Length: 209
Image (cartoon, rainbow, N blue to C red; front, side):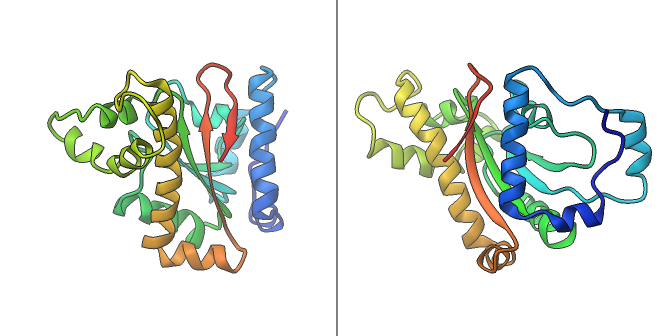
C-alpha cells in the first residue's frame, strides 16, 4: 500500500519519458481493474508541506474521464487542468507554466476523449450563451477535419467527430508551444515533453497521438 507522496528527489530523478511510461502503465492497471492501493490519510498528511507532481494533464471536464483514476495516480502525483474541449487559453497556459517552470513537472499531456460533447457541439455550430465563445477555440480543429474527412460535416459523422477530437488535441499542442515561450524553451532543452492522447470511453484505453 502506498503511503508516501512524490518528493523533490523522486521528481528530479524522473525524465519526461519515464513519466509518460509511468502514466501509460497506470492506464494499463486502470483497464485491468488493478489500481494501486493507497493510504489516503497518510498521503494527505505527507503533502501538507509541499507538492512535487511529475506531470500536468489538460483534460476535458467530462465526468466519464476521471483523470487520476485513468492513469492510476493519486494525491501529489499530477496536476490536472480541465475545461470543456481540453483547449488552452491564458489561464490554462499560466497553469501549465506554473506546473512545469515553478513546481517541476516534466510532462504536459493534452488529453482528448472519444465522443467529446464540446467537440460535437463545435462540429454542429452550436450557439448558446458563453458556450459560443468557448466553442470558438475548437473551430480550427473542425475546419481542419472538414478538409480531411468525407461525408457530413457534423456530429452525425462519427469519423468526422473522431478526427476533430484528434485535431483539437494536436492543434492545442501547437498553440501551447506558440503561445508559451517558457514551455517551448523547456521542451527544446529536454526538460519537458509535450504530448497528446485520446481516451476511449469504450475501453478505457489512452492512445498517444
